[in-house]
Length: 123
Image (cartoon, rainbow, N blue to C red; front, side, top):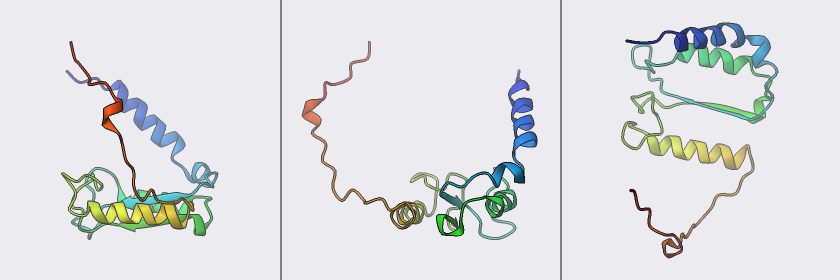
C-alpha cells in the first residue's frame, strides 16, 4: 500500500511556492547542472524546461549564476560515477564554479591518517 499524503504535500509545496515571486527573492550564487541532450534525450525525472524557467527568474545577478547542460550524462544522477556518462565533466564544471564564482581555493592534497581512528565494530 502506498501513502499519498507525501505526494499531496509535495504537490502543494510546489504549486504554492515555486513561483516567480519566490525565485526573484533569491540572490545567492546558483549553479544549475542538468542532463539534456535534445528533446527526446533529457532528464526524465524533473522538467528541464521548468528548471530553465526558474533559472531565468532568479534574482541572482548574472555574474553569480551559471547553467550547464551535460548531454552525455544520460541520466538524472549526473554526478554519479556509477550512473552518469559524464561525471568528470560535472565535477570539473562544479569546481570551476566554486573557484571562479565563489572564489574558493581548491584543496590540492588532502592526507588522512587512518591510524588515528578506531575501527567501527557493529554489534
